[in-house]
Structures are given as C-alpha cells and as structure tokens.
Length: 368
Image (tube, rainbow, N blue to C red):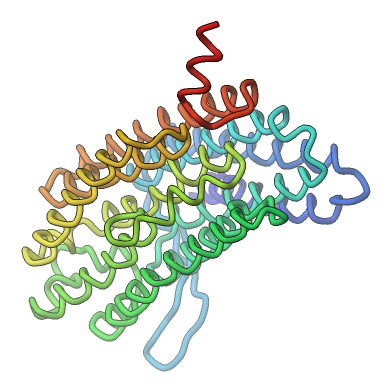
C-alpha cells in the first residue's frame, strides 16, 4: 500500500511540480523549464506503468473535510480501468511534449505552452485516478480550464481566442448538468465515494428511486455530452483546431474529449440501472456518429476532418457502453486515443512542411 501511495503521488504530482517550476523559470531559463516539463511527463509515465504492473489495489482514501454527517474525502482509485487509461494519458502526453520541442521550437511563448501542458496532465491524471465524485468534478473542471488556455494559446489570433471561448462556454453548459447530478448524488447517498456508490449491496442503485436514478444519470450524461462533443454540443471541437496541432493531438483526440467516455465507463453500473437514460444515450450517440462522419467526408481542412472523425468515434464509444459492453467501449477508447493522437501529430508534419491545412493543396504538392 505504501509503495502504491508513493507511485501514485509521483505520477500525479510530477506534472504539477513541473508546472510550478516552469512558471517560475518562464522568463529566466526557458529551455530549462521545457526540459523540466518533459522530465515531469517522463516521471509520470514511469509511475503509471509501474502502477499498472503492480495491478489493482484497494482504494486509498483520506479525510478532507467534515460538516455534520457529511464527510468529504480525497484519494485514489487504482483499478483496471484507471490504471490502463492512466498509462495511455501519460504516454500520449509525453509524446506530445517531445514532439512539441521541434514543432513549437520557434514560438517565443513556447515555455508558457509547456507549462500549460504540464497543468493539463496533472488535472487529467488526477481526474482519472480520483476515488471521489466531487474530487473527479474538481479536476474535470481543471481539465477544461487548461484546455481553454491551450486552445487560445495564440491569443493574438481572433479565431483562436473565439474558439477557446466557445469551447469553454459550451463545455460549461454540460458541466452545469453534471454539477447538479453530483449534488443529487450527495442528497441521496450522503457521500461521493465512487466504489461505495457502485456497491452491489448498498450502493446508489439500491438507495435511489428509479426516477431519481434516471434524473441523476441524465444530468451526468449532459456533462458527458459537453466534454465529449456529442450532439448538440459538438460544434466547439472542430473550431478548437485553431490551437497548435500538438494541442489537438493531446486534448481533442486522446484525453480531454475522452474524459466524458471515461466518466460513463467509471459509473457504468449506475447508467445500466436506467433504461430510459440508456435509450437517450443510444439515440444521441447514434445521431452524433452519423452526423460527424458525414461532415468529415465533406471537410477539406485536415485537422477538421480528424476532429469530426473523433466526434464520430466518441459517439460509437458511448453507443457501445450504452449497449452494455464495458469492455468494447473502453477498448475502443484507449485504441482510438493512441492512433488518433498519432494521426494528429502526422498531420502537423504535413501542415508544417506544406504550410497549409487544405488536403487538396497538400496532395497536389506531395504529388510533384
């Protein structure tokens, strides 16, 4: 247990420490700050792989705050789902950091960019390993904040700032529903502990009336719709391609948009307890998958094509989870994160070399 605690602290707080140091060294030693961020990412990956090799352990819980009968705790949930996805997040983030050394090498604000990458990784890993639903929500919001800074990194471009604001506001619409759902969980169960909420003997499914459970899961799904860019809150994702291409690889194919699917997988037993919610999820996910795939076929910007493809695939993931196949949804989630991040990074090479996002121009130039 002590070894697991040391590893999880190293995995989650290495990016946070790198973020703090990068901010302190932002103006004085920018090159050192970038290397510190990459070192933090490497340490996180090593810790995540070590945790996965050690296998699942009992949840780690620590008392945070007490008010009357309500006890708020923080801690870490190290089961198969979080361990696998944590490795995927850490691996993709480290690859993006190394790739960014060359891609962002001539940008005068590259150190600020690396600091925001570290902040994002800390928030994302802390969300993945969270044992408490309120803790998950806090880091869910921090992921959105870091994403806002990264999408709008080139703030001197009006299109980039507009895209960042649109992404932030549209995901906040979904987060309002998620927050209300989290508060309803507290009202019914009296706590936020995820393993206890999912328990088969005295969990939320046994404590909540069917209509209440449906309301809770629908509210949580509203948050998932916003974060995972599902219809009708899907339009922010293609516009978010205004950010640097490595940001697109990290946030909008591999990790941030996958957070919604991960949350549904984490709370899968609760969703399976409401047929009404499952039916609504299937309808929305099916519409999203078909609509986004159609839009991808007519887009000409290579990054927007990949963005619409990601939206479509996220719809298929949610459809698989709603159909009752946790393994299929999670397997698709992790494999898609890996190959779509690679596709975005490859598209960055084409954009950097040919100085255009238009696939027709890239094809003509490459055929010469």
